[in-house]
Image (cartoon, rainbow, N blue to C red; front, top):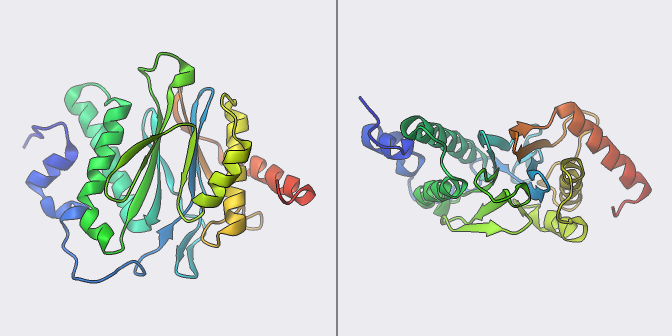
Length: 264
């Protein structure tokens, strides 16, 4: 058996369509309370590319279903993706998206363009529309380093989506999830174009701290359990996860600074 198509999703729809999330029929009803939900993700442009960070909490109603869930991942060598919404569906979407990009590269012998990756993710979201309408909505946030950009300063790009697969490119930063309103408020006051990567990582952690301060579904830095945000960068050097010890150090510095100035 050969793939015959550069799209892994199309290939799967031919050989095992029942494995695609959007092809699984659900009985009528609202299933929004049947699964844990992932929450706040932020993405910011910086001088070297982009930074994406996510808190670690998953909730089911007023119950904390998971304290150390990871919601930000490398999509491929130069891009990252984060998820909010129905946690199980979101993790499945990320794995399928990663396979989609790997499959394209193997068949075509080159990586998909950054625009192509964003469009492919939008198409996959549309395939999940029926489940989303029954309360199992997933919203990704996608960002990457555009290797075809004219300059490194223009290479960091961020894409957001709506639940029906609408695709939107964001200018400097964006956030998704229940704490996104508060994270965006923090970024609106503090963000400046052209920050270096270290300063942008600090800003992302601060935005998550502000989101956790006002949104019960977003987890703040947990100094007792040593649970801190997951942070990725996508630069000319590729997509990389920031060392958890470095993120812990930044998080402790943010918490210590808030002792002096709770409003940030």
